[in-house]
Length: 404
Ligand code: FAD
Image 1 (cartoon, helix red, strand yellow):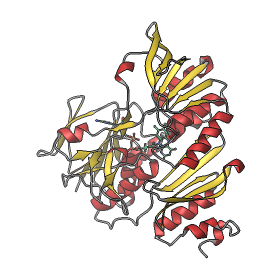
Image 2 (cartoon, helix red, strand yellow; image 1 turned 45 degrees about the horizontal axis):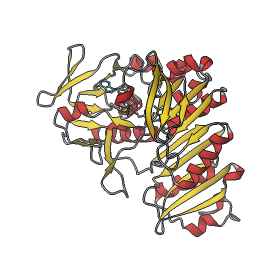
Image 3 (cartoon, helix red, strand yellow; image 1 turned 90 degrees about the horizontal axis):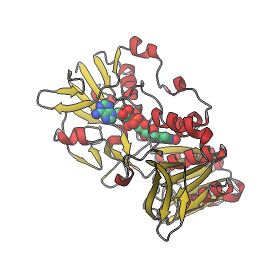
Image 4 (cartoon, rainbow, N blue to C red; image 1 turned 90 degrees about the vertical axis):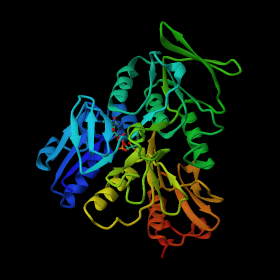
């Protein structure tokens, strides 16, 4: 293998380039990315960068010297348009052809949009640097912002905007916030947190129609008639995997590009990693798509091991974090399918953790401002240690003592 081509130049792709060089791969590595920026980290976009506490260059995952020193070719502002699997060639939007021995697809996701919002100004998503810049540029003159969809990214941005003195309304269709990614105690906590910062959160909220003035969003009419006036509508209703390029080339896709334990797609010369990949995970039935930095890094490391003939890295449980106001949530494992929970600490104290169990098996922890609880859960899941409900329920026993 002498020539590795990566489509997408984000978190997963740059990690793979890094990991390949760390493992001694000496062949050509080329990253093709459609954005105007070198690979950058997205988490600060809805947090420190939006707040104005982080400058753009600090978002970049590698300094310029990395690309020259490590001989990693970075092609920006260029979209991969088609994969010819028989010839092992990718054609890009500028008409160029790029050959490969191994191709890695790391195209990420794109925000879901609503057809009825097409062409309306003042509608903002939150995915890339340009989105964050556009929102940041308007913070000073916004009075009302409405967030459609109460997921982590949207709620992070809502927190920054609320702290900047903007009146924020959150419209969530489900009966609770974050329902796809966490349990009820955590949803309730974030509801109270946002309400305590003056955010107007509406649950079970069904939009009837959007109102515009001169082509700009000006309001939202709800089913039942209530109307919200808004200067800006942030849409945070989930993402779609960028899988069309793979699907068009005949690679198996479902909710993302289907891969095996080594991140290989249905074509043995093509891998898929990061947000766009539909992957198996130990202890889970079927495949799933994870949207997190740790997942992108882990999958890049797995693919790098496979490409260089190294053994697969040891299992690590999925994990994630989010920052809102002065709250940090850290999650390890997946809460879906839990049958019981143990709450340690109290939401009122601002520090607590929810441990999720499926029958007797510990499957996940959501820790609010509680790094020790998060680390305990992560360690237990990684090493497959036994952790019972009784062990975590005994609050007289400090967390560092639990496994002793
Ligand atoms: P990306 O980083 O999205 O990179 C994919 C790249 O491929 C993009 O640049 C895209 O433009 C490009 N591309 C797509 N199609 C093509 C094509 N045909 N040709 C060329 N290029 C193409 N995760 C956490 O763990 N914690 C957090 O707190 C957190 N906060 C987040 C906040 C925000 C605002 C966002 C948007 C994401 C956040 N995430 C967070 C998620 C995390 O950033 C993603 O999981 C991670 O970036 C996935 O990496 P990736 O390489 O798979 O995709």
